[in-house]
Amino acid sequence: MVAVSSPPYNSLEKKHWWITNKKIVDRYIKDARALMSSLNEFDLTATLNLLEAALALSPKCEQALELKARSLLRLKRYKDIADMLQDYIPSLKTCSDDLNTSSSVSGSLDGSQQLCRERVKLLASDDDEVLSFKCFSVSDLKRKVRNGIGRSCVKEGQWRYLVLGQACCHLGLMEDAMALLQTGKRLASAAFRRQSICWTDDSFSFSTDENHPQTPPRTELESICNLLSHIKLLVRRKTAALAALEAGLHTEAIRHFTKIVDSRRLAPQGFLAECYMHRAAAYQSSGRIAEAISDCNRTLALDPSNIIALTTRASLFESIRCFPDSLHDLEHLKLLYNSILRDRKLAGPVWKRQTIQYREVPGKLCCLATKSQELKHRIASGETRNVDYYALIGLRRGCSRSELERAHLLLTLRHKPDKSITFIDRCEFTDGPDIDAIKDRAKMSSLLLYRLIQRGYTNVRGIILDEETAEIERKKASVALQQEMQLQHQEQVKTATSAQVYQGVFCRDIAAVGGLLSQSAFNSPISVKYEALSC
Image (cartoon, rainbow, N blue to C red; front, side, top):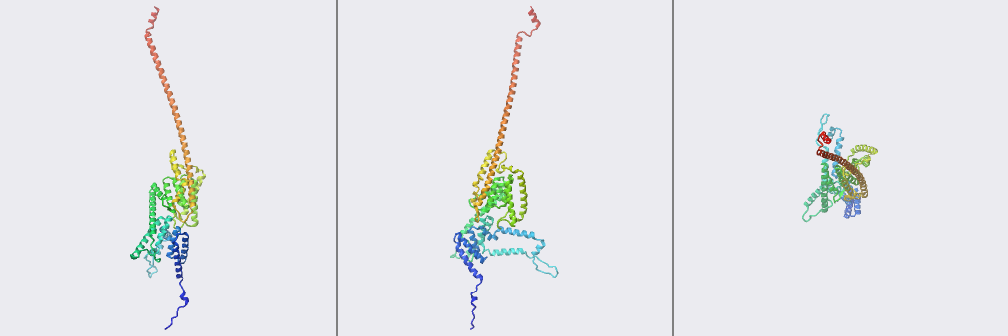
């Protein structure tokens, strides 16, 4: 027999580096699972540290990614989850596809050059001219390959839809949350059906194998179903309100938005800010300026960099000729636009919904500069005293004092500074914002609006009192004129009556004298009387 030489000792003890890392990662994951069973915030923070170490060794470890996402969800760090899984957000993917399409179309030099990129050369002739045939589109092929890879990874990443859907809900991305939760629920149900086919009657229970994706526990599925029904209700009401606003039914739109913002169940901060902004537009269209300014104040308290809310409030102040406040908002807008141009990107994270595009910022900044100069000129010319308080309070010119008192009472009850922070109790905040700063912004803006309403009430009440005083003076003058005319008429009547009386007495005396003369033969000839007297 030939003795076989054994391998050297070093070669027996040699291990690949990925085997060692796998053991370390598995130990980290095991410890992280043990710590996640506790609801203590310190244990969850320690879990994140272990998972970060595991992902540093194996960045594509599916179990470590899932545990990290669920730990962030328990810690209510929803923004970190969105940053981690932003590639799965539907609206972000749609926007990126649109941008890529527009950039490819705008960046193409010539249609023939773009067509040549989509061609593959299959045949070559003997001549100098090379024939090319378009057999398939390279971009379509890439898209199909990516979709195929995504479908093959659905089993590994179905937890992403559930975790990211809950995070999007708390961040105010309701449409994205609804799509993600529905997809995750559908995938979880399909996985449960596939597993239930392989089970026997004696082993009908949830799988505990860590190497295969687990079906979410029944309690988690129930909570996801409840959350999904709440999201559908909010999205349905918002859709109905926007449809009514576009159709011109402002009262109906205000009613739907009021149901959302006054709901007993908490709503996310971003979603409430968006609803307040849309309701302000509905109030503005219906002519209720004070309510529109109040909703803009709430929106800016929740989101100080909301460009649409600042633009709307500036236009509202300009409509009632309150030029200093409008100029203040325009200056704030200019600072925001300048910061965008300085940073060369829109403010906020990538997944945040933006109301403008970066290419629109320079044009809007030029328009703002022109508008600011115009307002400064009007303020310098002394037009700050002609504030339209009637439009602010919502009254017609020439209204009565009772109408003013009723409108002032309603506005005072709605916009009282003590009640300016009650909307914060119905708001769900994310990632621990500075609630005291939000309350301070809400109180300050509400106090300014309340003072403006009081000035409007004092001004309009003074105008109404002056009109009432002038009306009383006019009535007194008209009454005095009527009395004077009545006295003149009475004197005229008395004079005419006395003339008639005198004429009647004279005629009666003449008749009596004529009767006496006829009785005394006064009508006989004078010669006969003379002869009789002479005899």
